[in-house]
Length: 342
Image (cartoon, rainbow, N blue to C red; front, side, top):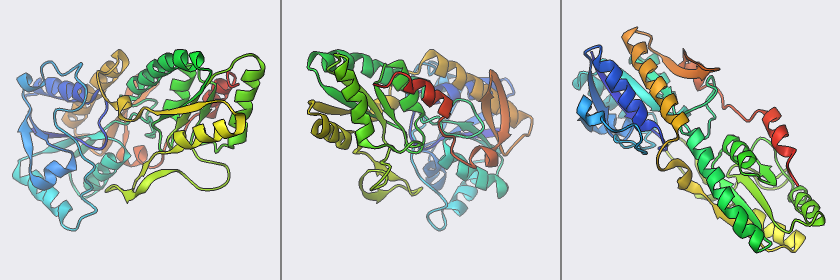
């Protein structure tokens, strides 16, 4: 059996841990492994590397992905899907393990329907993939947000300012809620709950009345107003899957807060800091468990499936089910976080 492995979409801590686990478990079945470079682009361009025991040794704590990644969508450019299929055959690949979010796994699901043996591993720091309680990379991102809030707290308090921290979260505010709750945010804004700047300012004014002349506000990049324009974007461009480049909510809100409250306000965009660097222990373990089970699904001939965490068990669900809808924030969790607003 010759197994291809690819990582697609945005990188996140834990990708290399999955690759390592797949190869180390698969070598026990005497499988061969070929790494596909730069996501689906590697199968369009036939760009690969061999994955041996030596190649994956030491990868557990390493961030990023040794395979590289891209947001290539073979279904966007005419002829690319045919290239993908032809190169799979030319490379002698019997099955594919695809590590990615809803876009990467959406492509895997379509290819499975067209006869390609594919298994998925859920990867997104946004934690917005259906059918799994958590995705690896999310815990690391939350830890980075918490770390940043701890540091911003002291400088914000010293200068009697309001600090708006913009974090990742296009359609779901999991990072904002978990990171904000762990970091002591005084208000948290998420895509699932449109907001009015006046409500945010009310929290800040309440704190001021209690003698707290500083506040920390966490805003997911996809947070948007109850009325007016939609999600804020950097420009009019989109990626291969039609996603706009988000950004601007932090700066907008900081200006609004200063205008409405008179308190000096600043904004910080954490951006790619959230997806870089060493994975946490939780993400290393989850990624390793996912990788081991993914290659076992290949061994068992269970294609068209994605590994998932449900409770404390690693299970498998269909790729179609996993990519059917976005998993949004549990409002009970948001309700808990809101206890500490203002």
